[in-house]
Length: 166
Image (cartoon, rainbow, N blue to C red; front, side):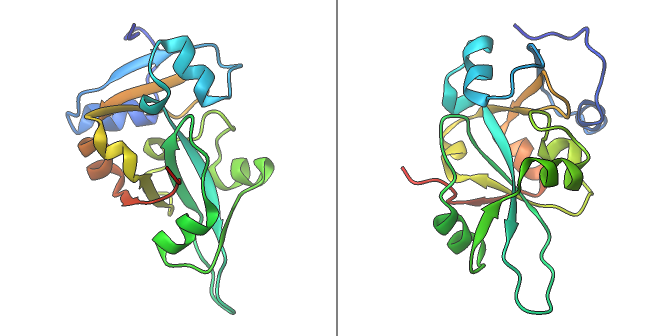
């Protein structure tokens, strides 16, 4: 059930400013696994998306920005497929400490909506297009926001890619 009596995050304020409809869902912030979030909130695992911080391999003398890759909770990123989709030689997951340092957010609270304008390239796994709405992190642990996929793409500038194998 959506919870409207919660403290607004920057992601929620941005959605409000842009007049983008969303529903906020809260859960125990000690839960850091997206499939468990889906279970607790009563949604199918392919409706709840996790945001991964991914580091692309840079060419010699070139620095690449970290990627934020949103994939359904039950899926695993395929590094080769993602690298091919974004046009780089290889990618790897950022270690927890580095993901937190790069984003300024805690694992379990990293979300593209909270990091708009922070220099991240944002990607959304193609299966999201099969849904009208998905849930993504709202910028802190224990908060997910449900919004239209089209609005998420428009707001974050996300590129739709193949990030997981079927």
